[in-house]
Image (cartoon, rainbow, N blue to C red; front, side, top):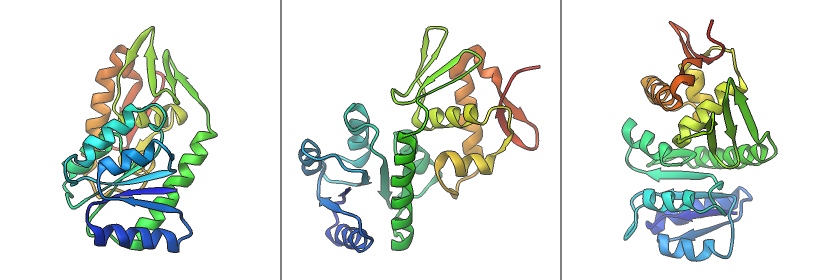
Length: 225
């Protein structure tokens, strides 16, 4: 089941029609109020959420979703005509799993929806804990702990850390990290990765030294020689 929160009726109906034609059950909502009322009764597999909504905008709704333990793990795709790198990164760091710019291609939308649902189901059956040199990660609880100190990370910082630990001692290019951590090839400058790595290092404190820059190649997490 896919929930579509979009106040523009023509766009909402187009998305719903496309999803149904792709054998996906879906329900549309004009506002956040209607959406939350239904969320109390039914839990979708994915949420498509417009940012520019009346009364309460999509980013505010997204923060509420991620604060609710019962639905926080549901993947969210943000919909918006805002297409600057800042807008995309802000949306992703607020907890979104994907970001689709308007106007959009229907085939691309369906492909991303199916891919995200499939990836989420695989993740549910994956490992629940990761660790590296004192950095302990609890994936379901979205917690990072270092020697009894809880480290607060944004969604993408957390995803980046998990990817690096899963692939420790392997050097990854910025382009590969954008593709693997953000889910597909974003049309963003690679300095997005640099900013996230810098922030991740700072938050990890002394253990940030394990997140290493390999000049001219990219980044890895590994033992410091």
